[in-house]
Image (cartoon, rainbow, N blue to C red; front, side, top):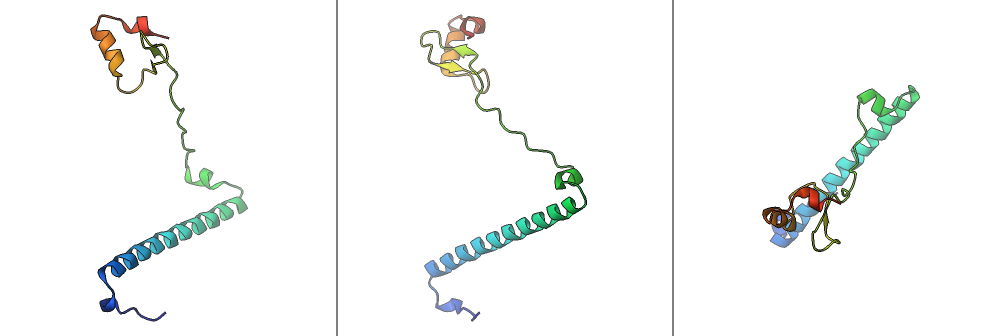
Length: 106
């Protein structure tokens, strides 16, 4: 590989080169991690274990997705709220108007 003469490059070319080098380093690092993981998994398998068993790694917990509706808008039944997160404006307004959460329960 021939050396680059950085003094002859414009600012835009230097920035593009920097971006390309940063990307190449990240991709190289990712490839090395994958190769190392595959080698470790193969060695653990030879010994009769999974890598998760040896490292004590737990399976990641998946999100249960959006919650089921627990409350329904008093005037528009198509609008609901699961009861999780911030209270929607219509729910707060209904509470301030004297409605109880039970009266809006699905």
